[in-house]
Length: 282
Ligand SMILES: Nc1nc2c(ncn2[C@@H]2O[C@H](COP(=O)(O)OP(=O)(O)OP(=O)(O)O)[C@@H](O)[C@H]2O)c(=O)[nH]1
Ligand SMILES: [Mg+2]
Ligand SMILES: [Zn+2]
Image (cartoon, rainbow, N blue to C red; front, side):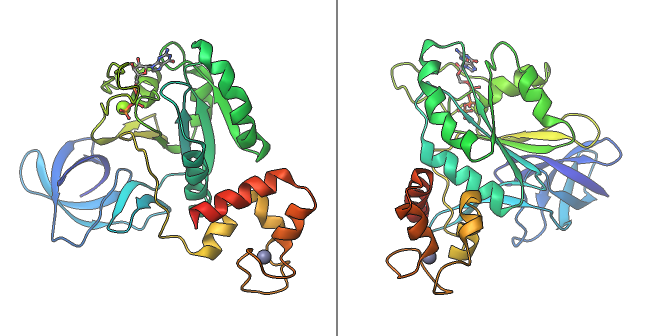
């Protein structure tokens, strides 16, 4: 039997079989790593149980990493949707990291600016301009009330929604799918950090070929698995300059004849900002 992984919870995986049944699976052996969005081959072990035997080849695999381990986010995604809001405060660097993750997986990236009903939303606009300047779609919404402009981004896409805790991922999915039953928690005003209400990664079907994955809030997005060459290509604004440095293995630091440094010296402020983020990420 074949199916689609729609939820991961510790060692258990929910699989929607191609015949429409939903079963809960374990993994055969220990070597397989499985994520929401994976297409898998399973053996049935009972009415509602099974074992995942193999994973079909993936078109993309989003994951973050730190020094110790890799954390899979979703497989076969065509679009990464980042979500930010004025409250709790969000981190610009995190958005740049999501963009790098999307670009290095050849996925589309768009940014959702949520909670536009809050007065503090006005402050967000100038910060979001940098992402628009790079060519990315930025959509302002109030997930708690209306999600029509986000829905327009989802057609025919396999999306993953990521963001810090409390930004409104599950609220957005609730609004998008009245019956999604994503658990939405009350933001803890005293902590100002929001509560991690979503603990599992869950995939919601949006019709024929489209789906969206809700993920637990994250504060970090480690990209240590990317090589310097992959990293520099993941910054769209650097692409026209790559290959123009005097040395082929230029680290774009203090090397003579560095095309990136020259562009910065020419006064491209945007590049200067990006170069700083590249260095932070490296
Ligand atoms: N004012 C306002 N509040 C919102 C909006 N969308 C979500 N919220 C509130 O923000 C808080 C967090 O929403 P969630 O949807 O649980 O956030 P999340 O991103 O899923 O958080 P985690 O699951 O912890 O990662 C809740 O109290 C929501 O009611 C909005 O459009 N406007
Ligand atoms: Mg949530
Ligand atoms: Zn260089």
